[in-house]
Length: 114
Image 1 (tube, one colour):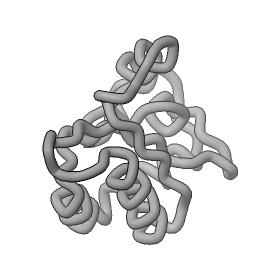
Image 2: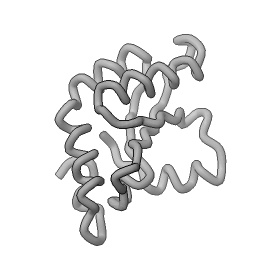
Image 3: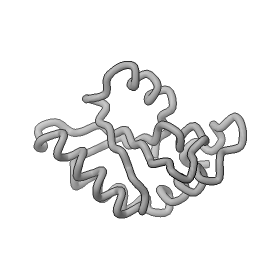
Image 4: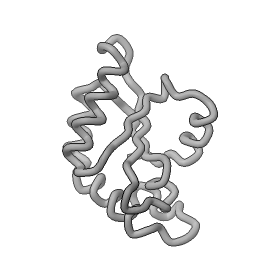
């Protein structure tokens, strides 16, 4: 299964499954947006990855930004906006290069490749 369905110890919430499926259904469009912003290695983390998302959850996406392709913060903001519009849910994008403790350890532990 994709996006770590088998990784869940218990049953994933309906919201987690819905958000994962929405992401998978639009995988090609997501990849095109990532390419436009020179972002690679997308991974879902947080409540969607853990399987405990609720009706108010967003999608947390960890990416790596290729160097020398423009301002990292502007690229992250653009990615977040375009992915949120595409998926119809807020998407918080975090660059691995800018990730700091204690969030880094938790995000990397939860991370599931898209």
